[in-house]
Structures are given as C-alpha cells and as structure tokens.
Image 1 (cartoon, rainbow, N blue to C red):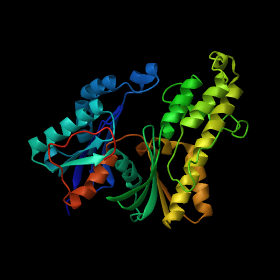
Image 2 (image 1 turned 120 degrees about the vertical axis):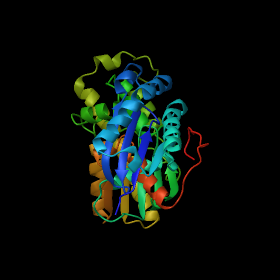
Image 3 (image 1 turned 90 degrees about the vertical axis):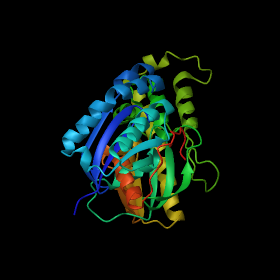
Length: 343
C-alpha cells in the first residue's frame, strides 16, 4: 500500500526547514538551515535578517530534502507549511513557497499551527500506539503553552504564558550573564557547574489553580541580582567568578523547571490524563526532561518527549501533523495568510 507523503516547510522564525514524512511518522528527510550565526551579534532574532536568509536558504533546503528522501515531486500527496504563529516577514517566505508548489503541482495545500506541530514532533518515528488523550506542554523561545490533547487535531488550550516564554527568559538571562547566543544551551551548560540551591530565585504561580505561566519576574530578579536594585552595577558581571555565574544559571534554571513541571502535573491531574507530552525547543533541556520524567514516574504517568533533533523548529513536525489533516480532508485555500499569533 502506497504511503502518504507530505512535504512540509517551516520558516516561522530563524530556521529554514523542509521535510518529507510518510504516513505522519516516518521521516524520510528533515533538513534545517540555522541562522544562529546571523543573529548572535544582536542577542536575538532580527526579523528582516531572518526573512532574507529564508529566501536564500529555501531552495537549497528544499532540494536537499528531496535528495535525502529519494522521492520525486510526483510522489508528494500534499504540501504543508507553518502559517502561524511567528514573525510575519519570516512566515510569508515559507507560506508563499508552499502555496506556489501546491498550485504548480496540483496538490492539496495545508496550513499548520507551529505550536501544534511541536506536539506532533513527539510522535515522529514513534513505533508505539498513539498516546492520546494526554496533557501536552510546548515550551520554546516564543511559546509556553499547556494543552489537553484528545487527539492530533483535538487540542484544548489549558494555559499559556502571559509575558515572556520560558525560552525567551533563557535568552534574556544569558544576555545578562554575557553568555553566547542562543541562550538556552549556554545556560544549561553553565548550570551544570553551579549549585541550584545557592540562589533561590522567585517562582511565579499566579492565581490559585491558574495554569498560565509568567517568566518576566524571574528574568528581572536575575537582572537585579546581577546589577543591584539601583541598576548601577552594569559591569559587575565582568567581575563575577565563573562559580558565581554558574550558581546564578543553576538557580534560574531550577526555578523555571520547577514551575513548568508543577503546572504540567497540575494540568494532568485536572483532566485525569495518564500521558504527558513534551515538545518545543526548551524540551531539549536535560534538567526539564529529567525532572519531569522523575515526577511523572512517581505519579504513574507516561511521559513522551520529542527526540532532541525534533525539539527545535523543523519541518518534519509540520508534515507529520499535516498527515492527520490530510486524512480528515481538512485542506486550506491558497488565500491563507500568515498570522503572528496562534489562531
């Protein structure tokens, strides 16, 4: 029986990606062109630079995806692309390319919510049965969201960040400590050499029973700790020992992970879920993976975590989720427009 092959494209932020996935799980190819070196100078993603790089990278990435998969365009059953949320000028590059290919090849066109795609990344190359219903945590540089996932296409939002996403807080704290961009890996690496109990930064849980997140407060707490309440100690970081910086990184990471784990377990208890899904760029953080695994094991919950190669933005997750929309006959019109926020 011929497998259903979906071509996926992703350009929501600073990775240009293309992938071909068979039957929603078997990844035939996944090619990602990173722009980290272009944005390192600025300590964050510059939208206009990202968009120009997407234009330059898209065709080489697309050709590489077909070469590695060993298939032709005639074998592709549908074309999918992330159309929200993200940087508009970046999204429009991938969206325009996907529309053009779908029109030229006479194939169905499918728009994918980037955040929902991160949930599907947990199922890529997964040999077992589908893990729904579940509580799903997507935690990345731009998003921190909790869902009650009854199926790949049945997602109910339970909580989201009200300000900074967890990954954004990692990047900003890395800037405060003058660590290399991107901040997540830099903080994690430094935290391994520090004592997470040496400095106790605040944990923000918001109102009683709230499943929303807030990470702006801990970022500010780290800033005040480093520069003082009057913000006059701007050069103090340069005078810090590596051990002091490591303790700050470890204390910060411990606070963020504790909030993420507690909120996720609270969500699972609220809907009596027996499975927890974890995806998104910050899902690659070892402290988060290990602590969530330990807490889930204590409560008899089954934790499914995306493989690290699929935690950061990629197109395999786009194609994987698009398979389910394809099977349900949920196609999009070529008039679909990019959106900066999740729709």
